Length: 276
Image 1: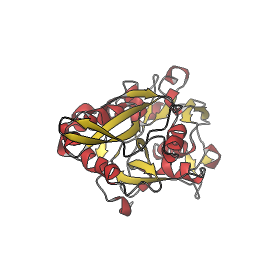
Image 2: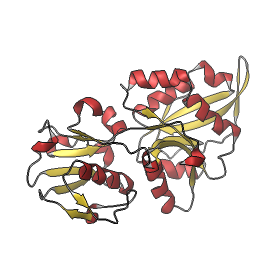
Image 3: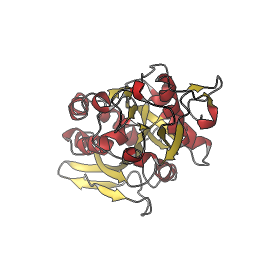
Image 4: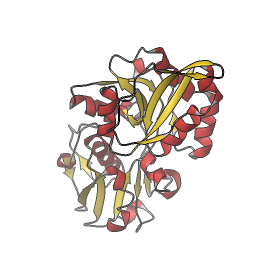
């Protein structure tokens, strides 16, 4: 396993390259991820199971936004990525000439509303500053979380994958929405009254959605857009080495690690990709 900090500017990594090991040739596969998910893929890459199925997995830690990572994956600079949900990926595909396809589901994780000032969602006051993401897919989900908390009402035609603050139909507390790079939301809490933060990003900042959030998103099992996936460039989805990533992720050993390491905040979804 070779772990690197990747700025999305390096040379292309080609699927199918092989390296020698004590037990024979291993096919090299690169997987880009970020935050707490890097720990998962490091664990997978270092496992005996990866070598047993013939893979040498290079885990690439993302230092940049998801759009850059998706672009690099779609253009073949990295073989697969594992950091996003279906809604995020669909939004990327709508705005990109090069497409991604999901090859496996991984997990769901709830978003949370966090505050340095309040301990309960009912304490939110008139005119409070609310941090939300600049990313359209994340922002849509964050707004739905705020609606679920009873702070706002969304328009009847609100799109859960691309809705924006313009789709707020009622804002009884006159909340002021501050758009922040999603990677900076947790760090911005001292300057805000509250913020909606995705679990992976929250974990990077030492926040646990089940313990620290003042409101936790209620996950809808029928909402496919919130399911996280392993994605690859269109045309690579049938590659046998890419497909092996799914079985490795869903192994009992890996799932036990995820449950223990992340305190049950990442909920396994093992649904055939054709059904989502």
